[in-house]
View 1 (cartoon, helix red, strand yellow):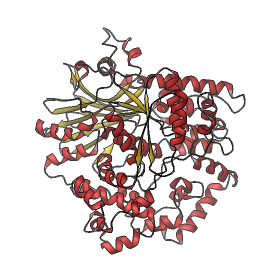
View 2: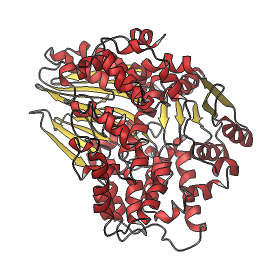
View 3: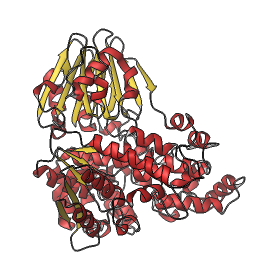
View 4: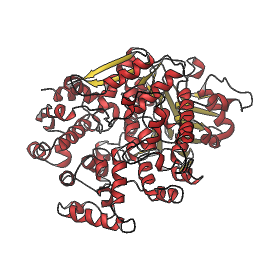
Length: 625
């Protein structure tokens, strides 16, 4: 929906400096910009008008008690506003949230059903409250430096704010563990950023900052293990399909209706896969007059035929963009700049391109299908995990697999970089998740500067034990709501917001999250069939060829595109300087394996733009032959 920025402390940078940094996010909110400043604070807001297009919902919202800058949507704002004394206009979720915080404070946050990242400054208490939604759909970063506290929706704005201190250097602030993770896995760990001083507020968390001394206090308001532990499974393993499928159908319809709330044009990103196709079908059945948008590879494999099936069935307009090497290469530097990180998913550029088309059509928000795989067990590695587990005695599996992995990796000296316990992440159960192999990891390890971590599933396993027929698999599936989902949500937010479009995620609605977390895994995975219950539900809405086919993702031929990038991209560049390697040595390391080459390209492009200060156009020139 928007971009938010703020500074707290003394002395606050000149208001014009803060506004200049905030306006680096104008793509997030091109419809209105304003700021609010006072003794020891300055807050800015870039508005994308989607709900209540009137000026009364412009931000910052301020009165004698407080100030609000808010990014996102609160879908249940009408029901929440009814409980307020002198209820504010029920047509504005912004004004409703402002009144709720003024009267209830942070106690209201668990009742919010939506996606959000906001900052509420309480003038009475002289405290700043930052909050982020359950799964981190909306971004929020912060940094404490010197006598100031900064926050923003994007890292580029935080860097500009930090540099107002005159002594901050982004090159000197690089986090070596983050760079090591990029080399090893292609992406950084969840909640880490490329810069040591910049932090990402965790999903389901608040952070309170006191103006007097800038001391902070974090609190978790939503916990996945706690949600699992609150009740037994919604539907046990025994029983017919009818009851759980009907419940899922109701929840999906309720969520899609909520996500269609808007006073501006809305579209749907329809890949042709089951998740986005089901969202499309339910929207159409509920009478929504929406267009659907699709990206496919020019003269290559794709899912366009399936997206056309959905469009034809519901008589919807299908708008398609075609990706080829020139389009992909020309968009790479732009996408990296807006992501603020090396691109992990090569298909990010497809999303960036299709969002631009939707923007040209006047669309302000796009519904998408992210979150279904993580909630309902839709990835291939989920079924591989189940098959692997069954091949080992549960009592001895953990030790045996660690020892097996440790012996294998020791041959490649990979154990120099990881502890014995951390190697569990790379056992035959987890290895498919990485889309890689042991020799490749060993080659990546040659440049590691520190050990990369793994998300712990211990608390998830404890929560599922006694509440699920297969707690190990349940914990494994749910763990993807932490690391993997965060990379997808980050790319959806940045690539859509680059085109000034809000990305909405109906599968990550409160009721659906609660239902899926408490649903026994037998409804998610049966044999080799993932998302079993979702597929049964989809039979009412979609042709069977859309439902029952191999998961494809977005098959961008990034390998061939990457090989077209000239070697000169690395000449006197970021990677050579950071790793103290010659251009020739760097190419000898990366070029034999296209996975490594892609990682090197993504890191080099990011380093030149974000760290080295080169313009997007300068890097585009280097990417051209």
